[in-house]
Amino acid sequence: MDKIWLPHYPPNVPATIDLAPHATLKSLAEDAFARYPDLPAFSNLGQTLTFEAVEEASRNLGAFLKTRLHLKKGDRVAIVLPNVLAYPVVLYALFRTGLVAVNCNPLYTGRELAEQLKDSGARVAVVLENFAHTLDEALPGTRVHTILVARLGDFLPIHRRMLVNFVVKHIKRLVPRYRLRNALSLAQALREGSRLSTGEETVDESDPAFLQYTGGTTGIPKAAVLSHQNLVANVLQCSAMLGADLKRGSEVVVTALPLYHIFALTANFLLFTFLGGHNVLITNPRDLPGFVKTLERQRFTVLTGVNTLFNGLLRTPGLESVDFSELRFTLGGGAAIQRAVAQRWKQRTGHPIIEGYGLTEASPVVCVNRLDIEEYTGAVGYPVPSTEILIRDDAGGEVAVGQSGELCIRGPQVMREYWNRPAETAAVFTPEGWLKTGDIARVSPEGLVFIVDRKKDLILVSGFNVYPNELEDELAHLEGIHEVAAVGVPDEQSGETVVLYIVPASPQLTREAVMQFCHDHFTGYKRPRNLEHIRFVTDLPKSNIGKILRRALREQFQAEVR
Image (cartoon, rainbow, N blue to C red; front, side, top):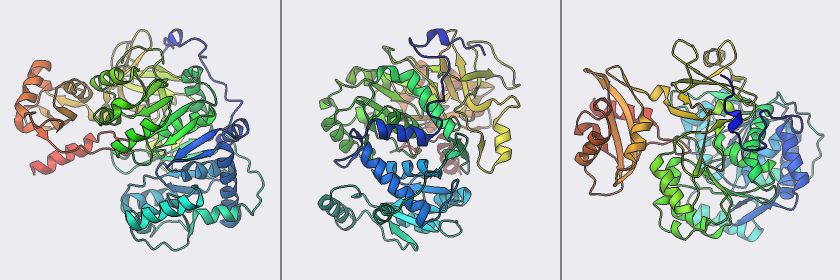
């Protein structure tokens, strides 16, 4: 496809990016350490680390990993941490020593974590003690030989550290019992590392930086091998599209999405490292009242999130007293932003949600809207610099502008392969090197990309396509609905039919009211067939960043029918 979007870029945004200044994440991090030593880099639990403090701690940890644990360039280290101050220290240490990060969801079950540890071949794991019992369960059969245990109070002043760790473990009882052999405290590793010296490790742009596992909503998760160049390219692409409106060394980004997820990893952690920004880490974003209190106390200029997070914040008492006067923009991604949520967000904050689009295999950002839009557009924006896109039909041919088909992409941010899965790698790439995203999209004459839906979530009713995003986006306007998910289930008459799962916001909401709304707003084949296909639930299954898992709902419906 011709790059019809280039004339619509903001002023001074280049068509391509130059990777020369920062070929690796190591050089990107060390440049930030040198430029912004005294500026705040990360805050959590009332404690702030400067770039200089993070540089020193990461150097000490890197020395420990190489000298005491004898790890070699390319060895994998599993990170089982939420958003706490230990996370950036560990990650910078891996960048500087050529080790490969394996991001793990701390909320995984023992079985899920074991699969990831075995598949990655990780030799060392760093875990917050609150989740050490899960790691204990997951270890048998893995290659992990050493565990570093972090505590919530790490990096706090000594008296607060002792108090926080005591309260967490003995008062709130948030640390289940565990018995980990070959376990050391992260604090001990840092102390030992401070007495060690280690030579500089040469890191090449093609070296793997992450084994970043996909969400696993279609089966066993696969790890995208993301190189240093992939991630540096995506940081520079994002900076080109967004950075002109940001001031180096003065931005404050609220990081509520987990850093082990690719969205926050790039958009918050890496981008704001490059910009010398201050990351305010939210350890438990599910505690919305606590999150709102943080927003009340903390100056911030950028906020990132997903639809369910924005929707939850808007319904949380206290948000009306938050000062949004310094907010430059709100960035949304991870899942489709619903128009009703975007409109309420603009009304409350005075800023639209700037929606983008990406996927793990692309580090992740592929498209993003301009920052100067006034209202929610429904588009995910323009392809970022140095990115090519193609919209294909089921036969593999390119469709005309304005028509829907599968979105395919090429660019320096795209992974080279899945870890140890040559068949899956071959299946996701075309012979010409296009990554098949599995998303149905269309492109406007101006080059704006619209995501219609996930290919695998498409509902086929009597030969007609029904897109869940369309139904959910419209139903979000119905008063009394907090959250809604539309899924397709097998049907003898039409092949599939629509089922709605709804979390009510009001006890006055009835299934009859929902059915009437569907009758008023959707053509026949897009509606639930009967009231039994409208189901009220207390919550919806979600991924670690709040994306609704439609596959789990389809399985739930089948189980209920059986």
